[in-house]
Image (cartoon, rainbow, N blue to C red):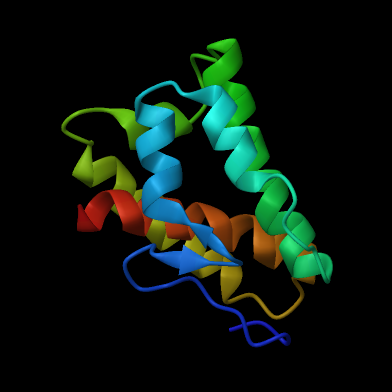
Length: 122
């Protein structure tokens, strides 16, 4: 949990006012316009949310530009690579448990955790 009281939903769900399940669905359909629209206009009230929205914006950019080496593609595979996502989730949780992590960094990695959990729960 962050100092602002925000943590990723256990199933990815709704975090920072974003429906993560819908966001993943839009990326899977390669609906870049709607994915960006989902992120636009959200009130960002702190460092955690800046990091969170940068992670999601980066995922949209990776899909839009076809960045082959971005881990976002592992989220969009059908079926997803459960082993890879499990390792990534553990690595992120370990990183988030470190005592000296900025709120922006915590938000960034929490967004990734929400994306992974959304994919794994669907």
